[in-house]
Image 1 (cartoon, rainbow, N blue to C red):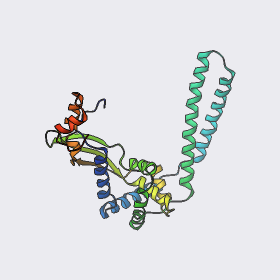
Image 2: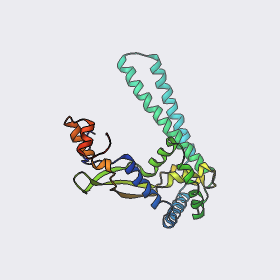
Image 3: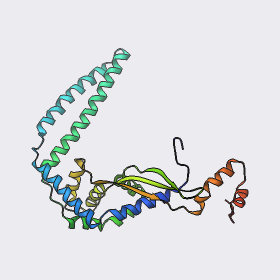
Image 4: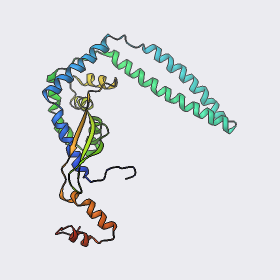
Length: 250
């Protein structure tokens, strides 16, 4: 891979297994749940003390930007010199983006001011924990995005060597259980669903950095580098198998 600085091999399954095991070990421990509930309710309390944003001001901005957008649209449809039309189109795109942002902001203000969210208890979190296995047993297309939300990007660095062809890999990522809890609460229509959605909309994260050692090296990975070198040298699959002491064809 271009730019890859790793000089040893690991299967994707080995890395995924190490990451998943770490998730299981860290998420939903009594200590983790207690800290999560305390911090989530502290965020709720702090937000409740803030004066609510005025939805009327945002609606006024939306009307003003809409009027500008409509004028730009008239100019664009009228045509004219190529350079002038291109400039109008650029301005029109910018106004459309502003409208999208303002409408999203208005939805958030209206949803927050509708009904105060209820506090979260440790019992609530444990109830959601019971639903996690069913969620993770779903289709890959559903589970994969959830895992990415929990871990964010997983970065791999190479650690100390464990032999001629092997090294420990270090997987670095962050664990944030809030997206999973929000999805679980929506899934079963839990009374705290609005609370978790509100916390997510505010960008709140309950993340901690994690480093995981990926040191298990199956037999086929231990010979990968040697097999690749022999293949690059023009050796056949059978010759490579014999050279590496494999009883099977590669």
